[in-house]
Image 1 (cartoon, one colour):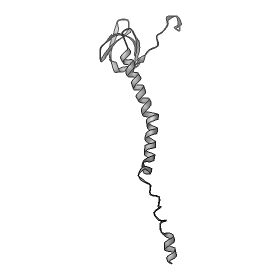
Image 2 (tube, rainbow, N blue to C red; image 1 turned 180 degrees about the horizontal axis):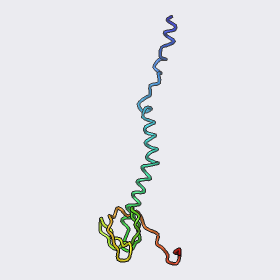
Image 3 (tube, helix red, strand yellow; image 1 turned 180 degrees about the vertical axis):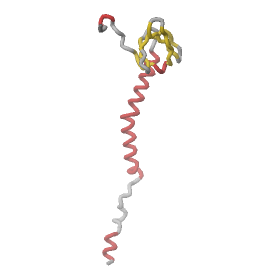
Image 4 (cartoon, rainbow, N blue to C red; image 1 turned 90 degrees about the horizontal axis):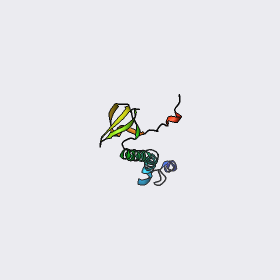
Length: 111
């Protein structure tokens, strides 16, 4: 009977308890994966957008985040004035400029 009790006992402290670092290793690994797949690319994209906003100037053709295409006719630190058609101007926030628009060549327009 005593032999059965010893057989059911733990194996001398090797019951599967992880050490301090071993328990956090999966969490650290997940954070590293999220950093390289999600956080770092987003930071690069934001940096490129800030550089683009800093380099825009009068006469550039841009597209807004709302989908308006226009030519810049005025700039301040926070507001951009766009001419979207002849004598039609709108003011948008500088941060709402999504990017530079492709300039159209009049010789390649579709009829």
